[in-house]
Length: 333
Ligand SMILES: [Fe+2]
Ligand SMILES: [Fe+2]
Image 1 (cartoon, protein in one colour):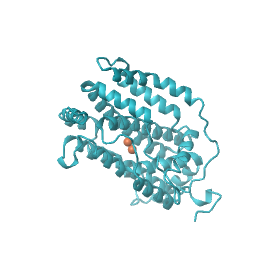
Image 2 (cartoon, helix red, strand yellow):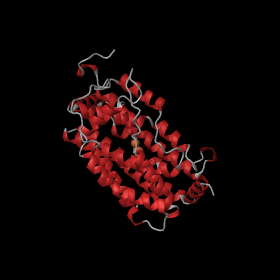
Image 3 (cartoon, protein in one colour):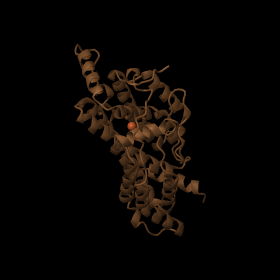
Image 4 (cartoon, helix red, strand yellow):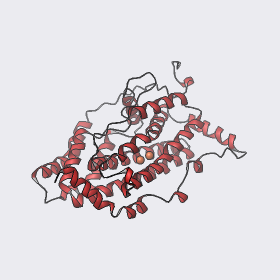
C-alpha cells in the first residue's frame, strides 16, 4: 500500500474519535473569552480615561519588547495562511465537512481572536504606525509561508505541536515582562492568549500520540525529517514596506532573543519536552531506518546545545517602521 494511503487510513481511524477531541480541546463559543472582554468599552463614559492609561503604560515598555509584540501580532494576523495550509493536509477534507475539517475550523475560530485582540490593543496604544504594521501583515499573508511539511498530516501535526508551544512561550514571556512595568491589562491579554496556545499544543500533541500508537515508524521518520530541515517560524517571510521577502525576520527574531521572549534555548527546550511527552526514547518494534531516526532525535538536543553556545545575538537595536515616527530617528515616507 502506498505511504499516503496508509496516512489517510490513520487519519480516518483517529477521526472516529474526533468528537471527543473537539470537546476536550476546544471551548464552547458562548463561554469563551472575546477580545472585547479585555479592552475598554467605547460605549462607556470612562472610555477615554482607560485609553489614556493604556497609552501611558505602553510607553513604559522597552522598544524591543514593543517591536516583538507587534511582530507577534502580525504573525497571529496571518491566520488565513495557516488555515489554508491545514485544510490542504491529507485526510483533512474541507469539502466533505469531516471531523478533521471541523477541528481546523474550530481551531481557526479560536485563533482568530488572538490577532483581533492584539491588533486592537496596539491600535489603542498610541505607539504604533498602524499603516506600516498593516502593510507588513498584508505582505505576510500575500507571501504565505513554507512549513516544509507538504500536505503530510504527520509532518504537519509535528509542526503545529512545536509551533503552538513556541507561541505559548512567547506570549507568556511578553505577559511577564508587561507585568513588570505595571501593565496588568497587557499581561492579562497575552496571558489569556498563551493559555489558548497551550490548550492547542495539547491537542496537536495528542494527535501525534495517536499516530504514534498506530504508525510509529513513519511518524518517527517524519519527525526526524522536520528537525533536520529545522522548524521554520510562521513569520519567516516577514518584510516591511519596500523590503524584500523575509528581510525583516532576522531583526524580529533578534529582538525576541534580546528580550528573552523567544530564544534558541526555547527551541531546544520545546524539542526536549516533545521527545519526553511522546516517549520517543522507548519506541521499539520499528524498522532500522525508524530506529536510526529515533536515535538521531534523542541525540539532537545535546547537539543543538553545543551549537547554541556559539550563536551571538546582535545587540544593536533595529529601527522598525512599525513603531511610531516620533520614536525613530528617520522619518517614514
Ligand atoms: Fe495564536
Ligand atoms: Fe496558536
